[in-house]
Image 1 (cartoon, one colour):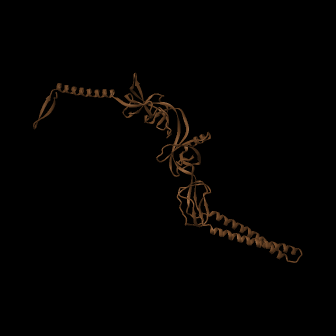
Image 2 (cartoon, rainbow, N blue to C red):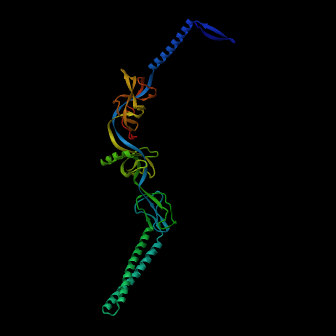
Image 3 (cartoon, rainbow, N blue to C red):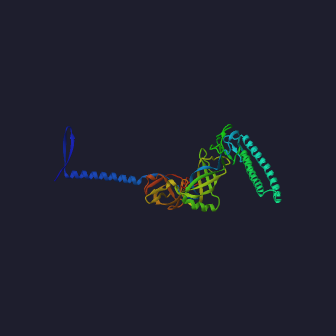
Length: 406
């Protein structure tokens, strides 16, 4: 029968220990027992391990469903002021950033050349009218002489043609006079709309041309003001149906240091969907009496579509994504000890994300505790200790004003 042997180093050589069959068997049994004992202790420790978690209760509330987007503030109207006549700027009555009303005088072009043009047109018109009066007298005289066969018909026809030509010349002169007066009015450059002036580009002494490409200044109408934003076209049908029921509320938060949202209304929906992006452009209107919004500024826009009645809510962080869809860990507390229990993995059906909370359609009931923090260490059936039962935090309480659908 073979014998087992063990080598032991002793000094510079090796000592061989020979074990009999019985000793070798006992040694194997001893090693197997030690391994089994260690494995059993590990499994026992795993079964008895308690995971600290944070749990929240599912609650039912009425919550608004909103669509969120980033918008751009645009003026209600914007006009580039340009000169329609040429000349030197004699007066500048507008300053940078000034508020103006429609009809206010902004610039005055030197009017002397236009006054001379008016006098010239008036003089020509008076001269032509004098010639016309003489031509009419000649026509009457030639008419009598023609009836008496004293003058030839040709002389009468020439006199008639001259009188008719002078009448047309007078009409041209009247039009030239009106144009001269109009140019004189254009020399006074006035605000076509009410609004705020930007940076003035020309000053007193600058020479400008008629229909010059240069912009003298820009006036933006900022009271009220619009906020332009886009939404996916899949919401277009619901938005149009909702508009039939009345004005739609829009919450607008301007960029910058202020984070307080203000209420506006949906003013317009574009007449076509952008086929490149698959979005529809909308305009929200805000009175802007406090001049909180500025053209070109970015703003956060939230359009309220509808209100979900008695919706079941959970913090979004409590909903996990698995191979079969979203699921949560539901805590089954022990009798007499609400701070400990076991967890159960349960599939849920969700719909909207409203702010920091998710609407759950099915899978759990109102009041059930769901693990919010510590899921990474959990498995079905694991024991847990609830370190902070936040039944009034994130899952209960009023809905924040900024809750939105994503």
